Amino acid sequence: MTVHRPAAELAAEIVNAWKSHTLDHDWVAALLVRESLPIRHRGVAGAAAIAHAHAVLERCAREISPVFEAETPTSAAERLNDVLASVDVRVTVSISHDFAPHLHYDDATTGIAERLRTNCLVALATVLADPSGALRLGVCDSCERAFVDFSRSARQRFCTRRCATRTHVRQHRRKVS
Image 1 (cartoon, rainbow, N blue to C red):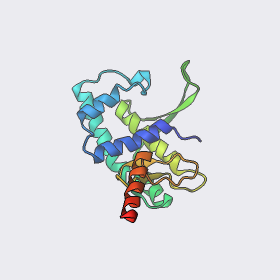
Image 2 (tube, helix red, strand yellow; image 1 turned 30 degrees about the vertical axis):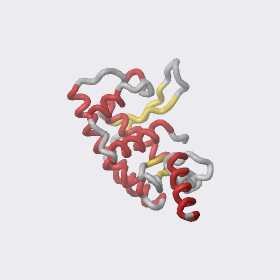
Image 3 (tube, rainbow, N blue to C red; image 1 turned 180 degrees about the vertical axis):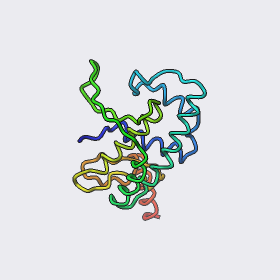
Image 4 (cartoon, one colour; image 1 turned 30 degrees about the horizontal axis):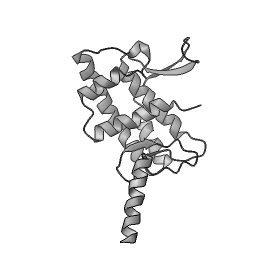
């Protein structure tokens, strides 16, 4: 099974927004109108819908943050399994003219926030089920942002090249001085 990369990256984005205290109603409202969301979910949401989505995504961030912080694939899987136990997942094959057939993972409820949470959880489970046994979830050594490692070597330590460069320049300057 292949990883739904956007959902895995969204999981990291949700955790990072929560940790940096930017996961607020404005952040959620902007998420709900993103072009990357399927058309059936896009649109302007009312204040009540945004408040509900905010609560669901904040809960999701609290639940999955420890998964990114885990030291081993086993401990990450154990932490994620605890969260997955609370999800009633319905799997469907989506067939549309715009995309190739793909899987949708929906919570028993129909709200977009619950669907995003469920898809993030399933994507993280798929990442953790990497046949190589590598831990492909992590927290940046430099800025402590969560990331998903899609590199071939599965040895990523930084969320971006910019963070890696900053750290290596800092280390080099310490050595030289």
